[in-house]
Amino acid sequence: MDRKMIVAGNWKLNGDRFLVQDFLTGFADTSFTKVSPILCLPSVYLATVQDANFALGAQNVSEHTSGAFTGESSVAMLKDVNAEYVIIGHSERRELYKESNQVIAKKLSAAIDAGLTPIFCVGESLETRESGAMFDFLTDQLLSAITEIGIAGIDKCIIAYEPIWAIGTGLTATPAQAQEVHSFIREFLAEYDTDIATNTTILYGGSVNAASAPELFAQQDIDGGLVGGASLKLKEFLEICQAAEQRG
Ligand SMILES: O=C[C@H](O)COP(=O)(O)O
Image (cartoon, rainbow, N blue to C red):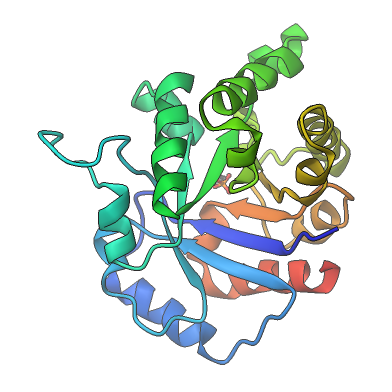
């Protein structure tokens, strides 16, 4: 098995340059060896980060390379400002900006072609879970990506399972609920390639905090977290990284 633990913070539309500076200072003396911390900042702050003890990610990217697409950033632009990762398919992008599985697949393709690592998000609503259609829904999300980028493309992604009902609600999936879906995702990938299934990093996201992280990260198929609200609090985010370091 070749999976490194990852803790990725997603600041969403939060933070300012002072908070960026606090994180640069707060991480300066850290020396994580088993976990890779990533911060997905609002894109305007990416270029302000130098010599960080964490990797940089963006929260979105255009599927287009250039042109009349007001407000968008291309993969090349993100690379220009040293982003190595980009969140693609977050449920907020799917819901609020109507990003379809097809558009998300094209974004994955653009990112991979440029050498950016996508953090590819999948996850169901409570309604879908309770209707019994959860695994079919997740299969559709995964399948549309594989159709575009192939299983070799998935090998270049980090997958994040984020049940929509657990995002920003304080309702964390239980470790068993999260493990069940992570295991399902790995089994789904194994139908294509067992090595890729074994080696793909799958993060859990949805109200992860310092208290819930150790038990979540102890699950066999959970390789870290995609952390929203708690990634804005330096001390707590460091504690979450530490929990992943101890599991790793
Ligand atoms: O990208 C992060 C997720 O949406 C989780 O956010 P949250 O930790 O605030 O629930």
